Length: 66
Ligand SMILES: [Zn+2]
Image 1 (cartoon, rainbow, N blue to C red):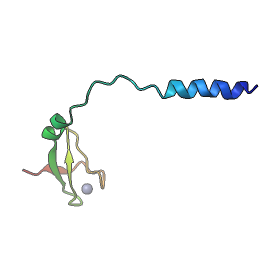
Image 2: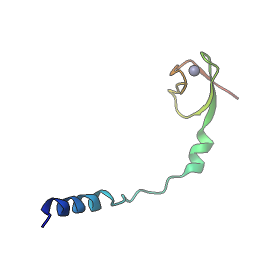
Image 3: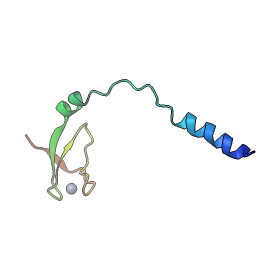
């Protein structure tokens, strides 16, 4: 019979197993998001963390909009 096909079926089943990930708290993350404006291209975006870069031009020359 088709031995290769059988092996492939087993692999797919293993890959489809979902990892037991703890629930992600989206509300907490959104509370920590700050609005930034890029000083280089004027793009406004929401960012998180200390090393925020503009998603449009990859500049780190951004300021928090308060
Ligand atoms: Zn920019």
